[in-house]
Image (cartoon, rainbow, N blue to C red; front, side, top):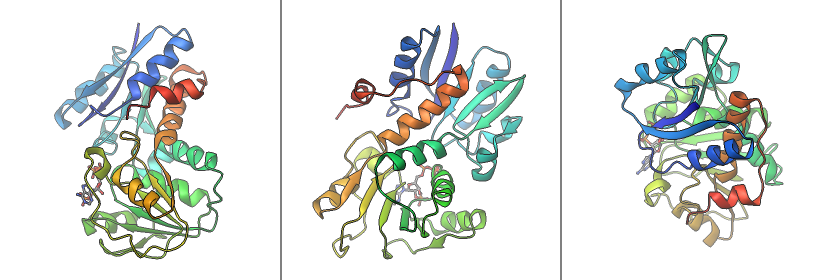
Length: 264
Ligand code: ATR
């Protein structure tokens, strides 16, 4: 029986096991997928279990997408550019780190039937998933990317990595067509301390969080008459890409798949 895990801290919110186990069953693959809450000190030993073939693949989530890198032998070009790994695979005895958040976000945006090319994008947050979002947005030829983070230094660090982004002081809102909440705020239903009441015109409010499905951020966007979308499809598509990397099969996404993830 092959064993797969998602590791992170916290890890309770993840719906990855539900999704992967469904796809494993649908494809008659004899494997299990579980979640594991770990501390930073456990990273090395759990990763080494992949090399020892006790574990066959790992998804990495908050806050280890960067800290896991020193324990790997090789990175995909996307993981290298973003310094962010969410999927680990053993290939020819080499531990390879991939980043499937990029394709997850790209496919999710493509599915929205929203023409993002040339648009002004405002990203809130500078955590683990933000480099992947910037990389994806760059490839989609958006017009402008502005970032704001409560802790300014982290936004400045991102600017060293991606020279074309603009940094906005936390609390200020620039002109934007799309606002992406990439903070962890919605996870525990906290409200974002930004004043959106002066935002005019129809915008796209996008939250990378998928659980809960309707964060306070999205509620505010909706109430003000904007389009609101959560990160559910991004999550499903990043999982699909990881599944393909591990099992060489493209799993199906249908209404039933999406229903599995409806828990609010
Ligand atoms: P990490 O920062 O370890 O990568 P993350 O969950 O990927 O973890 O990122 C959390 C993001 O949510 C950060 O941008 C964080 O802002 P700080 O860098 O200032 O910590 C943001 N965040 C979390 N709680 C927040 C709050 N109450 N208000 C504003 N931003 C918040």
